Length: 516
Image: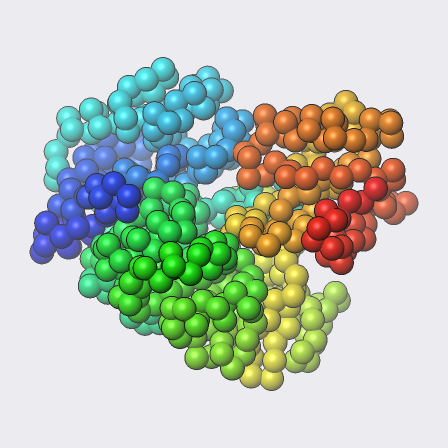
């Protein structure tokens, strides 16, 4: 399946609709723009196996560029538009991207990136600007017909690690694969959720995330209509469901919580009866939240657990969840192994590290050590999560990899934030943890040991938050700074972070969990 097939059969069918503006791209539009983009990439000397990067807000051009790369045999890296210039430059350098396609909203960042990486061709979909070439103006110079050497490319996803810098998962590249080759997400969406060409799929999340990107591409492979929210807001999502007759949507638990907090009269005024499947993932969902959503939307809420690494995953239907509340399901084609610290498999209902076998192998790009750390001696692989299975094989997650923070469905890794704050002249030591937050699931909290205890207070806290925001995307910057006279480190220098994190887990939500 491929959009080109639907462009030939039904060129006027809506492929993409922007939820708020109603701006639409047909399958015919996608065929023309992606073909011209493929010609442009070839004119830049990009051959199959090379890499480009896409960094822009939610808009139709995101997929136009992605499909141009896909039919050119290129890897396409989706980069968060909330990152700082040095973070974007790192991903471009690490992935080997030779072109960056962005927008006017990121002109200042793009100019900085262009200055740091002069060999990367930078384009804007909004016209030429400082350091950026006009993507559309250059595309329209080329034919709207396919390039002569079409072959399938692939997304290259980045999954942050405890070393602080994100790590790429670069799929093994097989030359000569047809652009219509089978896609795993299409198989899952069609078989488990009933998706097809009649589906109207709502995407409420940023397209640079793995699931919105991969599911959006899958929907267009099937000929469905993809409704994209420019930016999520709870009532806007309900309005989009009613306005466009949405039949399938993928949320994260924070979306659920925000919708449930709407006044009853607001929730009740929108018709969500067209929904046939609601899918959620990305973060653990509190059982009461999911129960409330089931009561509202009906027993149509599906869940899956997986990672960008693609080594395995679990799925659970609404009916299964109602009899296994809190579970993230069972695998379809892989096998789960729960192992203790010595790598030995443990019996049901015993916590341990979650490993998968029977799935695709993966490697972390430019990080052989991290790849080795993810492997069991039997060849099984792990995302680093901790959990247990019941006697029927249903998986329950009880912890997350290396104290990863999940805030609003976004994965945040503390080490990068700690490394930055440690460089502040008034900071002796720092630990960053995720503290419970009723709306976002977790919030980023930095527990700081100052050089001078007399500096501990609101003024330094504000200074550190501003310092972090000037260097990191705001989603990573701490929302709370607390102070501790001595962080709990072992003689080896290892930070005993669990002691700090546990104090926040048991603290009252109203006392801020101050560690001082």
